Image (cartoon, rainbow, N blue to C red; front, side, top):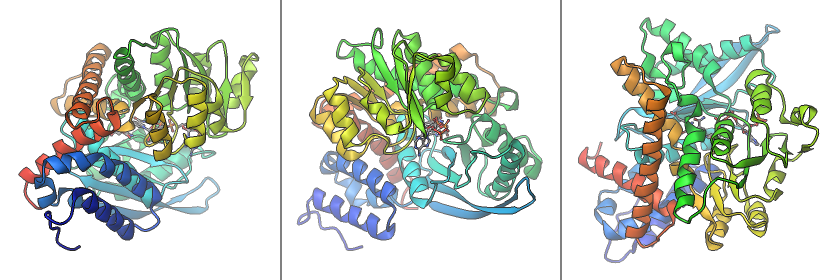
Length: 456
Ligand code: NDP
Ligand code: 2IT
């Protein structure tokens, strides 16, 4: 990398150059490129105001993971056949605390997905105000169609290797797509057996009697709705009497639906990777919970108990359903420019990202150009990792908070993230742009701490 001469090279050129370097260093990792591009574009005003960040090469350092680990995960299926998957953990940044971030088990997992998620996690975790660094991990293992015993054997093999790299003060994984309390239980059991110590704080999202926190299961979905509520309030709007479309029907989606309904909204559509259901009288959440949390069934079975609902076998079609508020809570790039235009045409007022990077950059720009309120993932879905940090706090101090205590703290954290992001958007000349505001707040906290800790 050549030396930067601030007198001749302006900040935008520096950022563009660095972005090109990221592409060269991580060829074909398109999701990572997308996540980096969005953040870099937001940071130009900060770099202009604080040239120290350029002089100290903070951006160059922050975009390079501290460590990227891949490993073989061999396991034996129910037929006695040996299977081999690939495991990953990216330990992206430890300026603010132990690496922290979820594990994703999904056939689409690759280095690009893990790195983009890890990169986002660094800024998200900083935004929570908690003391956690950023990391992410997972595997291309597909839990769909696997027996419980196969999932357990896979988790045990995965943890046999991962245990060499994690610890309560080192790196603390949690759940993400395909990893819930069941998988965390198997992972924790194996870690405990390997280490011979009960270190509850090594993982979060645990079942309550394995050291979990009340409120963690609900935290991402509830936190998303709390954040969007703040954003709506500023414009004199609310969830009450609004029609809401929420994609996905997993952990984040289910608890976003629950809180939106509690606040008086009607959730009219949800989905899984096969398709979506539209129920004009309001999605029955008990049915979704039964299908997804208990019976492990497809969302299309919803119409069996609710014949008034309609099922469509195309999950992206959910964005054609007219609504006031849309909350993408399934996966990255699930909401593209075509869907954005349809939502805008149908009069959508607000978007809240529950999933990580669910909106393409073009779609995000389109919403903002059309004055649709937009709550970006790093801010809006930070409630999950924030309560994970509260779980770590309870584990290390051996206390146990009530659901209400956790909920009050979660609400405060989400309000705080909203306020800090709004204030930064004003301060840096983009009032109301929460994408820019959130990226700046997250970056400044990590960048200042990295500078204080020296070039290491
Ligand atoms: P779950 O595995 O519980 O649910 C995921 C949901 O999204 C399922 O309905 C699933 O459908 C659907 N989905 C997954 N992959 C795809 C895909 N490639 N295309 C279409 N639909 C898909 O995961 P979570 O609810 O935990 O996670 C959802 C999103 O929220 C992810 O982006 C995750 O990174 C993010 N997130 C999660 C947090 C957490 O605490 N769990 C915290 C912050 C963000 P199907 O069952 O058919 O695969
Ligand atoms: O994307 C995320 O923030 C998560 N999957 C939750 C991470 C965590 O450590 O709780």
